[in-house]
Length: 250
Length: 300
Image (cartoon, rainbow over all chains, first blue to last red; front, side, top):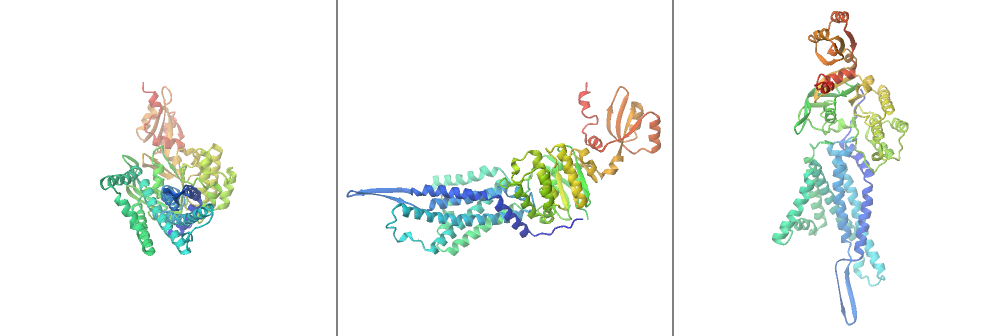
């Protein structure tokens, strides 16, 4: 008989990772499109702009920030998590795969994608500043215009971590909906339901705000990173645990 | 060592039992035909062997291991059917390259050779192919992967007669160069009859027959003659099929357990004895009613 091939999960996951980057190259075009859109929306300033006039001089204050770019990028990260989960098993099991190798290669792909997204989102914010600077005559930019490389790096760092966290949550949700289609209705219902009920009773969506502040209020970069890594690891661990008996192509 | 070893295998979906208490073993380096009617449970069985589905009861061993979630079984097995999921963003050339990176014994020369022969172009996309072309491409993946266990689930769906013939010939040629265990499911036995070593016939999820194809040729015998003579013989044998031919003449297919003298005697009484073709036999064995479709029309 033909000799049996011995292989390891990591070796297979590596091959799958290469395969996935090729198969999902199109997702990066959507990233560019999403960031471009956010960039264009940001040009006109975000939030309420205020203005006034005094002694014949009128002025308008516009807040221009890269926040929209980051938010759009995070939504993209969430959605690629879902799409990896939707395609994952079905595509992987056409060739060599088991459940763990499929998850690991998806994770590796998501991390690669979110690093790229984190870098491009931050640089896009930078571009916004430059465009603002040039379009306003380049004068009186003030000391706040200059961004120190460390600040830039920490921006990339934070954006990447947020994107990674959201993509892994997206992956988990995507797997749930693969498990049972009812989750497609159930999960958004649950999410918006609690949001709505809380907002009505207390005037604030406390749970969501608490969840966000758990990360955003963290002053130390190391602790912030630790929090993201631990939460991501828990979610990813749940993915491996919950779906290890899931059937393929039922 | 057996390549596949099933015992008491059962799989249900809700209330339907797709595979019911199935036990069999497949020896290495043989081409086994898995034959059954639509809905007999062929695909479910193959998906359990491939490790896609979990059985509800019974055990299944592939290369002496449980195939479910098993990386070793997956690395040594390829499952080809019309629903293979391939990325819509990659063209056929890229898919072939990627497929090659997964399998240790991948034969790229063969893949490219077949690819060109079947008139496929590297720039085409899988989702844009016609049904027959897609089946041909999937079959190429299955052949070139050269896995110790190669499973084809109705591989010829949509292929025209010429392509089907070529595919079976390619399968046989490649098999002779590199023997491996092949499971080929189909409901058309006459097409694959010539290349099979063994036949596994299932009906309603249960095993009906599992034997070498050569023995199958002697399994049954067809008797045609006067009704009373044939009916008399029918009492002593297991009747699989019974058909009225004319006013007084009938044809029946029975399990061949007659002694040579008995057949000789029958011949003298004017009964014509003929072999039963393998595909007819399978049809008789899996038929739901003995009389077949004629019964529906002969009711009044």
